[in-house]
Image (cartoon, rainbow, N blue to C red; front, side, top):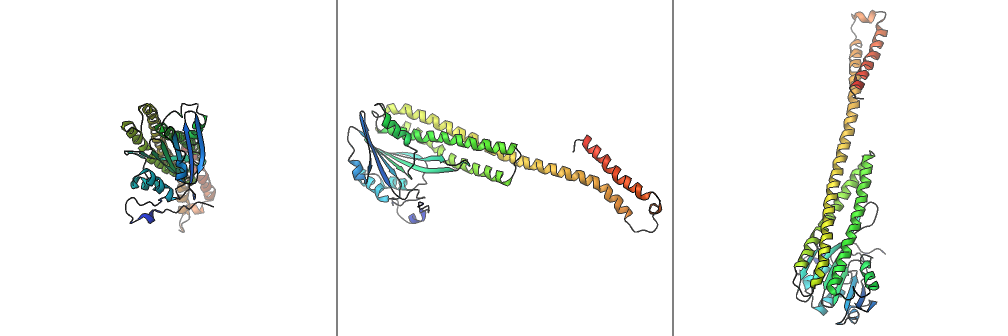
Length: 356
């Protein structure tokens, strides 16, 4: 069964701030809770039926990563807010899936929102997924709109870690999640580059159809959407680096700076690809104009050939009684000779001028 894709923003109209209503498309009908609890020498993975059950894995000497996939069950988010004293506006932002990427610092926790971007088909159609993080002293909550493999690399690192990853705190886990999402953006840029190369080849091959124009416009809209959700991530990482919160260890800053470099590279790539797509649109318009000019040139040549013939035909098609040429014995062959000679002379002239 397909998930409900209705936009539920209208349900929130008129409600007070902090009202917990899911806003956006329901990408998953059910809400699942996964728990990964680890410390230097051991780790445990499990599925939990409730937040209370997930919290049974928590301890002061380990890091607990709780992954909530699917936001259909608002009660799960509300239970987390009640147990950890999370501000209602933060919970509201988690359930409102049209958030701009941002970083907010509170006394006992950090709140991050960003977008996971994945290209699903050869025509470069980007799917967006909001990912929210609550980073606490021993717990990291991750809220995802659906179940997918976006954060699988982080899980694999935890499973295969020989102690280096597991010996780090929740801030390092948050960095790893952020880094995995940014790395996915590099894959997205590769897909975008392939789509642009395919359009360039089509234009160079002379495929100046309406479908080509639609593909260029679609690609342009996708790039605008990508830029809208990637550009704010640079500010998000900068705010994390400037943060004086005790939840972000000084040792994690070097990793955050690396993420910042990656974000800048992606933003530059997006801007470059946007310029290239604008160039493709200019090439398409120029190609259509050139093709129209070629057609007009051919029509002009034919018009230039037939205008004098039409002139002669018009003269000798008049019904005057006293036209000496009409009574000449060779007048008809001479006229046909003129009909043949004039186009031949004009064709030679046009070829010498390279109009044909």
